[in-house]
View 1 (spheres, rainbow, N blue to C red):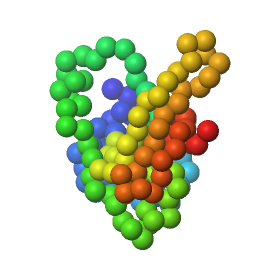
View 2: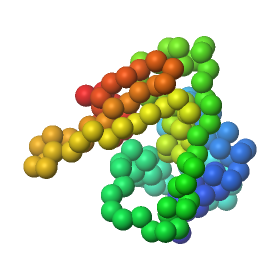
View 3: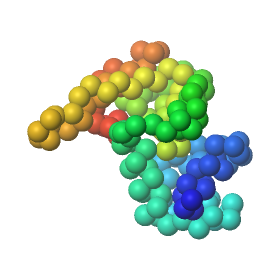
View 4: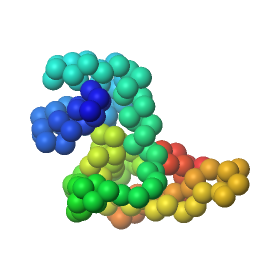
Length: 146
């Protein structure tokens, strides 16, 4: 397991680390802040490691699931992140909706895969909605409106 995967696994089970990652994510911190935080916990990652992980977080995984992957995914990881003072300003998916590397989605966040062009000319399209009515739009896998 590489160091970035180790950070992710630790964050899944360490509420203190996840809270610190949430603070960085909500503030729009640069990759070097994540590198420094990982170092505090004994991990050696690079800014490029973080960027690749962040990019993969918005990329749908394809292929067949292994039995252990299916068991790990059962139930999902969500939490009620709704905060009227903060969420009331959103018009699109924000960090608070999906958490660190899209690991802990808000209970109100919905992401629906729409399509991918068979000839590769059209990018993948998703519908992003908030059950609290803050947004409803189509965009790319990273949540950017298109």
